[in-house]
Image 1 (tube, rainbow, N blue to C red):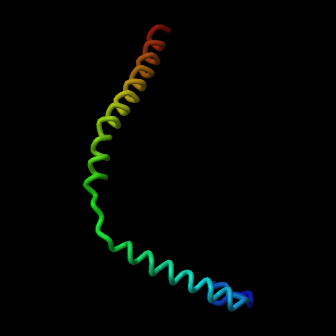
Image 2 (cartoon, one colour; image 1 turned 180 degrees about the horizontal axis):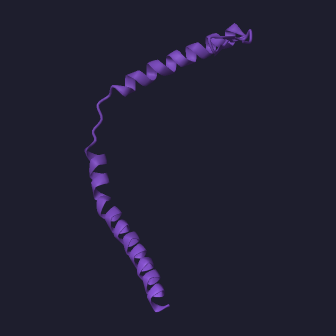
Image 3 (cartoon, one colour; image 1 turned 60 degrees about the vertical axis):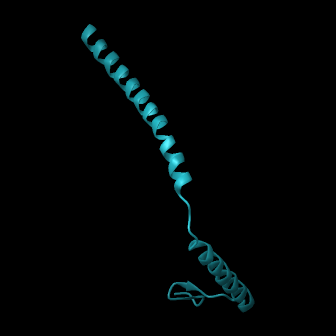
Length: 81
């Protein structure tokens, strides 16, 4: 094991950089925890997703139709031979 690692963690050679990185991590964590607990109104998102259901079904039917046509043509080619 290298002298620069302890239990798989890399030691910071410059303590000032390590302090700045630790401070930045602590501030980022503190800011993210404040907004993570905010209540979110999901009705608009759910409505938008529900509105897209018809489009997804239409695309699925179109793809299935193409596959059925390909299978039918393949079957006809075998029968004609």
